[in-house]
Image (cartoon, rainbow, N blue to C red; front, side, top):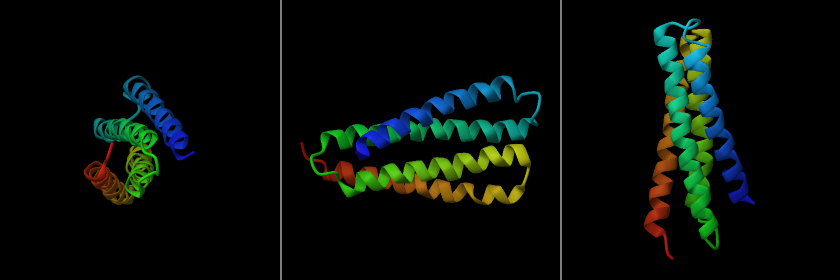
Length: 127
């Protein structure tokens, strides 16, 4: 069940990243300042990177008998990171509310937790 959730979520988040990137390149270039557009595009880029990482987690979980806790935590950390990091950057770009920039590092920490958990899972991986 968790494999399906992560796989579907990864596909949706990656697809949204493509749509968001295209939207920023075409519809937003005349509506946002150069700085706001750069911030927005950073959110889209990190969303794609971590959607692909979530896809990797789903593939690894599909190969595991008993789901390793480290992989499950990694998957949820990547989802949380996308929501917090990319979400705060998207919102900051549109609103200019500067305190939203303080949320992005929390998402960055979630990304780092995800990568650390993936490293632990790799270290413990047995075929």
